[in-house]
Image (cartoon, rainbow, N blue to C red; front, top):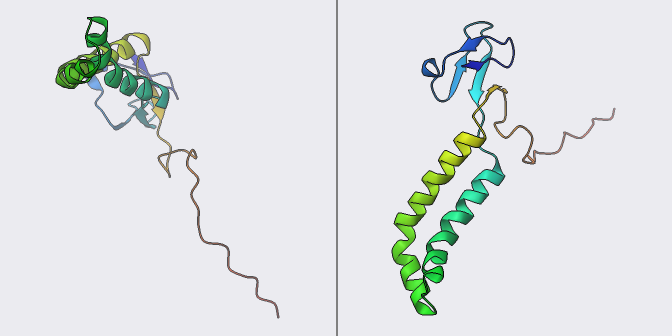
Length: 122
């Protein structure tokens, strides 16, 4: 069961879909929280490092580490991505958030606009 962050209405996970949705209780527009930049960065670093670390730990040295790492990049990278996704789902369950209107970045990116018009003096 997932509760609405606004009114506390209880919804079943089966009834919820991806993207934005309206709460059946208060009709507030909600959306699922996105993964944080730290979680995404940790996943990317693990996907890149693990395929090269495994051959090294198994005894490959020099150019063989690079060769075996490149050969194992797709299968081990995929396995690491799945494992990190499962780990995230178990440790940090997704939560519903209020849908903020306007910019999707919620003020984290500086948006430069044109300067204001000069004041007309009479």
